[in-house]
Amino acid sequence: MKPVAEREIRASFVNCTKGEVKRLAVPKDLGTRPWDDLDFLGWQDPSSPSRAYLVAEQGDRLVGVALRRAAPNAGHVRRSMCSLCLTTHTGDGVSLMTARRAGGSGDSVGAYICTDLACSLYLRGKKDVGIGGRMPESLTLEEKITRTAANLSEFLQKVTA
Ligand SMILES: [Zn+2]
Image (cartoon, rainbow, N blue to C red):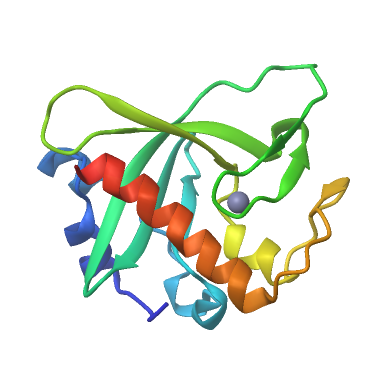
């Protein structure tokens, strides 16, 4: 994706109040993010691990959503698959993230997503998955990226619908 500035990120959120947008923690390291390898920008709030954010280009606009991470099942070893990039992680590597729907209906939409939101880097083999890993597939990287983008669009459409 194209590099984005803090101002653009704050302007992109579709499911937050103005006050929430003002307070939310935008990453301080935007200048050094590996933009060429990112399909979307995702991060966890360093001061509150239950909050995460995702910003992606959708057509010619930037769409940002605030996510709530469900509490992990402590002590229970499990494997789960990210619904965006289809990477399998053990333990807390995948979390159920919920996003309030835009428009103030009070509904929310949930999806299992890599807890660190580093889907783009797992896809490209730029971040180690550890135990678990990716299922061998005959798709090319380009095809996997396209599929992840489609999964993400579908999720964002549910949030913005
Ligand atoms: Zn993922």
